[in-house]
Length: 111
Image (cartoon, rainbow, N blue to C red; front, top):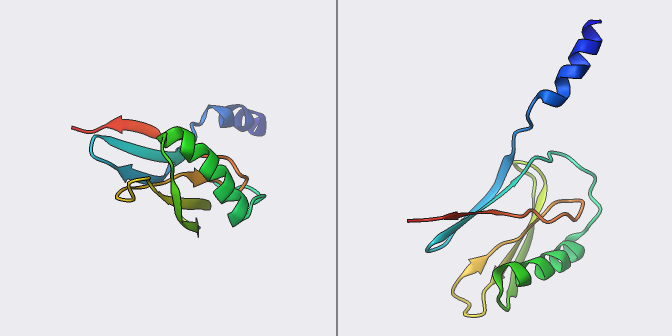
């Protein structure tokens, strides 16, 4: 009976989102969070970069130049791709999870 009660309680426990990256710009701040902690890796650096390029071009509405692709292990595993905007003065970032999912950021307005 206790096991059944515990199983019924598990879905009601909220999952904490983990912040992967906070990217600050003049008037906006992009917060990349995920509630997925561990998953099977199905994409390599080339595929992560390809997915990130497609997403970032539409999200940032700019022509972007790839600067770096880095695999990070903390706080969870993810690909961080760095792009330079067309003016080359500002860097922007997409985050790709090991399964190829793009992490959509929350946009916060700064004062």
